[in-house]
Length: 261
Figure (cartoon, rainbow, N blue to C red):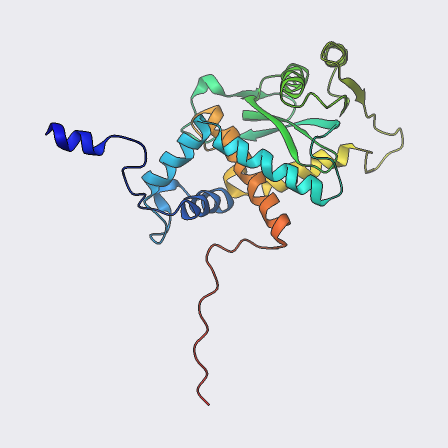
């Protein structure tokens, strides 16, 4: 028994059963289609294995590291520097499913939504920089201050941020303390729909998230799981942009049959 245990010691002693690319494909499949984990098609690895990787990659930071590396590649491909210098901040309230604990959700009285709120900051290309998930009852100004704290910590090169009229002077003052100039983009006095400078970028990002059915409603029991699913949605979007694919391909093209003359 001792000899057997000694032979099993050391890293890499167990052969990996499933291809990590298939694990990633399965996670993206759940994110894009919105199905429950246990309803993954059988040609993917077992759903418990996929979710185990999903949770562990969140805990050890692999998911966020992968997301940030892709963001840098997209920025460089667009002729930008790898590190951003400006950000746009906004929030989005979404309903939650029945498996979400009452303690992590609230009511957004303005939008009449009971659920969670996603506070995000993007760069000028609409790529995600920071995401904070709170109860929907948290005001934009309070969530915006949290976003500014994360921006200053994770992206010290950011010195400018744009917000809408829902953010009060406390956000502007908090940004100044973090070395970030916060500017409010005001709506024009004229009636009708108008595209607001800078503001449309973050609105488009929220639209990108809504293309992933798993994010249309917050199904994640834990706020950190919800945050991770947002990162996977943006990872899906950026990977398709880098490869030039308009739609996700989950499998390689099947071999073409031999043509009999």
